[in-house]
Structures are given as C-alpha cells and as structure tokens.
Image (tube, rainbow, N blue to C red; front, top):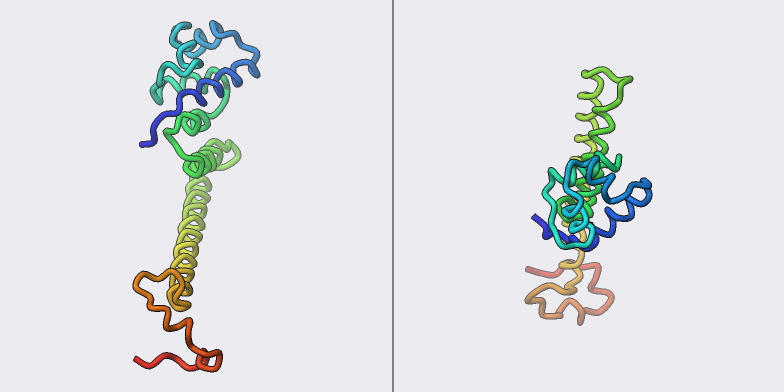
Length: 156
C-alpha cells in the first residue's frame, strides 16, 4: 500500500470544505468526527482511515475514491476504473442484466487494451535488441557492419 501523503490530503480537504462553504465544525458534525480530529487531518498531523475518508467524502458530496487518491491509498488509474463501474451500477435507467453486460464489455475492452500494451512493450524490447542498442552483453559488432550487410541476416 502506498504511504499516506497527509499534507496534501489535508490541504485538499480544506479546499473542498471551503468550496462547499462549510466550517470545520459543520464538516466534522456532518462526517461524524470530532472537530479537533478534523483539524489535525487538515493540518497533516493525522492519517485518517479509509472509513473516515469515506465519511468525509459523503459529507462533502465528493467521491471517496478522490480522497483515497489524495491520501495515496488508491492510484489514479484504479480510481477511474472504480468510478466508471460505479456510474454504470448507479444508472437507474438500466436494468441489472444490462448493467452486468456493460460491465463485462468494459472489462473485455480493458483486457484487450492491456494485452495490446503488453504486446507493444515486447515489440519495443525486441526492436531495441535487434538494433543492438542498450542490450546487456552486446558487443557492438552489429554497429560495425557496412550498410549493404543490413539486408543479410547474420550467420549463426
């Protein structure tokens, strides 16, 4: 798990609280935490649990995942995936079967894109290896060939 960056989290919480036009006491009451504890979080002196972050997010009417990212509990990519899933599941115009089908399609696209990214990474490594650039143990012999020999594969 990533370490908590409570300084940035506290600044972010303070900014969100001010944007919501809530006093420290009002937010503390709405989130069910003590006023001094919330003050310490905002000043970067306390590391709130995921449960406390969820309570604060609910009181601020922002996504808990956003606070998890700020706290270093969740990375940005994971948050985007969770929010996408949450939006699909929360859509009242879709029935349960439609939601499940959409989630399956979404997951299949994510897997397909991950496979394509992995294949491209392998292709990039192979291309570098074939060029003899930055390959551990490469002798540099490939660099000394004349231009005409590039069309002929090296003998084994």
